[in-house]
Image (cartoon, rainbow, N blue to C red; front, side, top):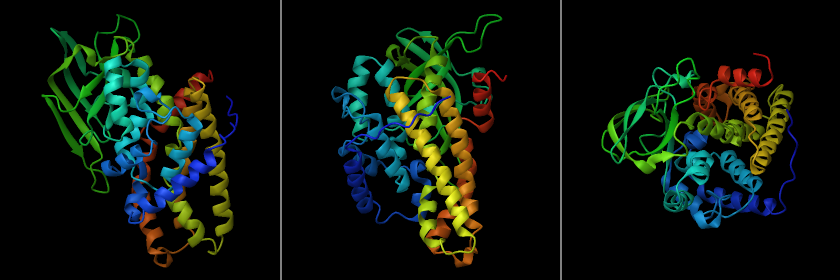
Length: 376
């Protein structure tokens, strides 16, 4: 397992300065609650502003609305957005994994219609994987798509689907044929592009500890999909879906979810008793994780599939993100903290348990690592 540190492109410093100036202006009125949510904050107007500056789909070919820039330049954009606590949720999933999947497997008409709209910040996507009876054991999913005249008929349920109630499309993993007797349950699964405005779809938000509704249960009742809704090859859905996970698990969103609190805490808590070693350890861990994330960005740009390395980064990153709020809270009595920092930490303490659930639980990630290392 290697994490070679890549060379940052020459134009990265200018890009970073441009981003910081934009975010300073755009974020003047962001509250601590907005900044604590960052990529879980959904703001279509902000996403359109980001798209207008060419910062969504920026590595895609120009013919599909991209800027043909490098993956490491894209990493600069992601880092700055997360560091500022920007509400990027309306374009985050499409930029991170749905767009690249469409670019690789979509029909030409779909690519020309959907990718430029994603790059403009106009389309939001969600990912349909988990089901009520198939969470960690995803191959046990029961949602089915059956061939009918002119297309497919979809029935079943998805759960914990982030932003389904606000999104335009879902990319769903469903069963299209039973697995062969005695064969792998991973066979017979396919991916579909589902227009969430289609008849027969109902979406029920699930309220979380903060009283918010970012997760959803989505029910498909005799939903008719056109033939072209099938993404990639029929029956190849498992391999296609798992290939996306390197994109989902390798980015700075797996290490920077709590960063706005660390940035504020560096100023507010530096003189607190015992603060120096605590803050120093946090910064050192973050620096190491950042180098790992940049290494993965370079691997993806080279066309590699660093699934094992991405699983390791997400596991280590989630542990860091979840430990950070409590580490800062332990440095100063809450009543003595600046109100902005205290509000950030209060929200993050309630949000942080979800960090090791979204994108694969800690147990699943460690199973992937152990299996690839030959330990199970």
